Structures are given as structure tokens and as C-alpha cells.
Length: 259
Image (cartoon, rainbow, N blue to C red; front, top):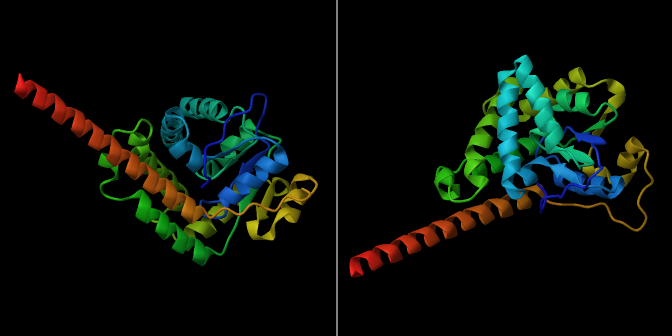
């Protein structure tokens, strides 16, 4: 997950569809794409949790249409995706990584790049994510926050999407393998690239036909630390907002009783 949300750049269109699962270096990948493509990257997790409230609300609508699957739903889904990605040069992270067929239809010239890592370490990393995203008190704490009050509904729909694609309730290394196989089924071979961020600039630049940036080190962002930081930020913001609400309520009650 990235450190801050990206701002759309008018006239920019999707050139890269990031098909890698979360916790496969998507934050570093996103930053690298911004440098190479000279445009903003839509890192789904970051945009949903730190972007304007309309973005998480749009994802909820899009995932509902995806789950419904009717002809009118498919059309509505494509319209929502086109609106969501307007002004961005690339998309990374979930749920975009599970909407590859739809995104290929919208952006037929875009390259599909799947970030990869060791499946065993990925499984352990995803278990850490689950700890922060499914805390029992999260819905109540986040309720006073515009946008984030919808976070649990968003996670629920993400779970529906993953369950349908990978037939698993909890992400495991088998989820990772099934995602790779699914991509090979839905993406033409000439459009699909597998990439490990530990390999740096060279293979990514080769895949995109770009020159290796001079004097610019490859960005390395720790996804786990970013997720933990954002989780703590929103929990702290929610608790602070609740404290303010209770303080205002107590002041109002005291004033009424005083009168």
C-alpha cells in the first residue's frame, strides 16, 4: 500500500494494468510506474483508504455489479471503472487485480504486469493484513469518518470477489497459485508479464519499452509498514472523532441541565 493517494492528471489514460495480489510489492511497483509513465498510479488500497470518500463508495458499487454479473451490471461496472480510472496512467492492487478482463476491455493497449513473490512468505504477509483489517471493533471506530465508515462493507465485497475467483475464505498460498493460473487463462500471453520488484528497473523497463532512469534508485516501500501505519491512523482518527462527539454531547447536556 502506498503512502498517500494519487491525484488524477487530466488527459492521462491507463497504460499498465497491475495484476499482482496485495503484498507483492505493489506500493514500490506503483511508485516505479509513476516515474516511468510520468503519470499518477491508482493504487487501489491507498485510494480506497486515503483518497476522497467517493472512491471507496465507487468500489462498493462496482463490486456489487461484478458480483451480480448480469448484462446491465457488466455495462454499469465498465462505466464505473472508466470513471474511477480517468486521469491515471496505471492501476495496481486489489480489486483492480481481480478485474483484469474488464480492464483489458476498457484499455486494449495496456500491458498487464503481475508482481510476484515467494508464495509462502506471501501467505504469512497476508495473515498480518487480516489482523488489521478484521479487528472486531473496526466498524464502530470508523463510523464517524466519511468514506472509512464504509470500509467493512468494502472488505466484505472484496472477500466475495476472492471467494468466487479462488474458492477460499482465507488467503493461502493456494490463492496465490490460483491467481497466477487465472491470469494465464484470461490474459493473452503477449500482454502478460510477471515481475519481481526485487529485480529493480531493468526487467520492468524492458517490458514497457522504457529507458532505465538515470540517477534514480528503484523505489522500495514496505507494504506491511504502510498498511500498519494507515490502520493506526484511521483508528486514531475514529477514536478522536468519537471523543469530540461525546465531549460536545456532554457539554450540551450540561448546558440543558444548568438551565
